[in-house]
Length: 68
Picture 1 (cartoon, one colour):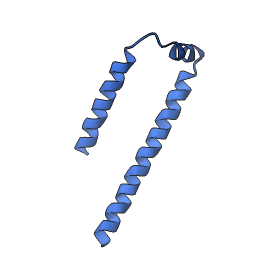
Picture 2 (cartoon, helix red, strand yellow):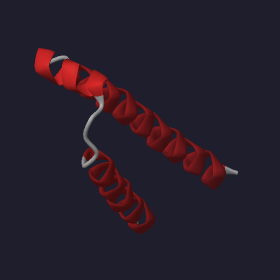
Picture 3 (spheres, one colour):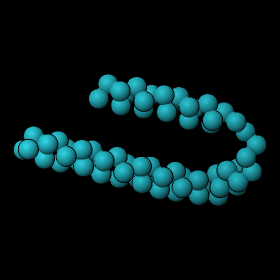
C-alpha cells in the first residue's frame, strides 16, 4: 500500500508539471466548449474501473493461493 501511495503522488506530480504547458489548441477549444470536463471524467471513470478490477483480481488470487 505504501508503494501505491508513493506511485500515486509521483503520478499526480507529473500531471501537475504537464498542466503548466500552454498553447495546446485542441485543449483550449474543448475547454471553451466545456467538453474537456467530459473527457476528463471519462478517463477518470475508466482508470478507476481498471484499478477496482485489478485490486479485486489480486484479492481473489491471494485467496486461491492461500487455499493451495
